[in-house]
Length: 315
Image (cartoon, rainbow, N blue to C red):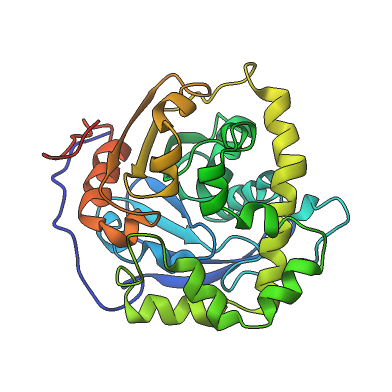
């Protein structure tokens, strides 16, 4: 890939400035996307309980060198929210990954890079295993693979990540409890220990509140029900047998549950050989907390340049 100088990080109060919106019909959902830029294709996939606007602090800058497509996962944001099925298969990371492949097919991209945060990184992980010929680079923000998480549960992690098991309970138990006060829930969920809500712009926070609906909460619960059943079984069957073929970059917050309770590079090395990563001084939402660190790391990684650890940050 040709080397071009990284443009300065753009700052704006607008959400996804310069992006146009489109709804794509996939094989199982209607997916809301935002697209802008020219150059190599780069897919951005958000986490829970966010939407595609979680990339708003870095996406316009990345669009100066890439064709950037940010998507709302099925069940989240303005994407459709298919009904859950008895086996929860509508919300596996594979099903969400199929949506993503369909989105990229719509725009004519056979091969592309992908960055994911939280649930989005788990979708990207599954995509890289299921169709390795299509994923050229994978960047993951603040997760370790699902197999590592669910086979190494500790009290410390469990207390910080209670929602994994609460939301996975049989419907409609968690839906009814959370649905009693959606505004309280979303503010509590985003207010991470030692970080607070100040990292979110008022515009982004308003968007997350708007999208926290009863239908979205049901979809999120189905997401977690699929994780502890079908997704985990897929990973168990492939652990030690299949590996990610593309280059992988892992960034995690030193002040996040991931940084506190896991060794991310060690965990990812069980699945990938071409791997690099380091902690950055953030909580669980790095792209909104420290875009000045995430943006240059992404730019360098996706352009096949050396990802430099900034001074004061440990590898």
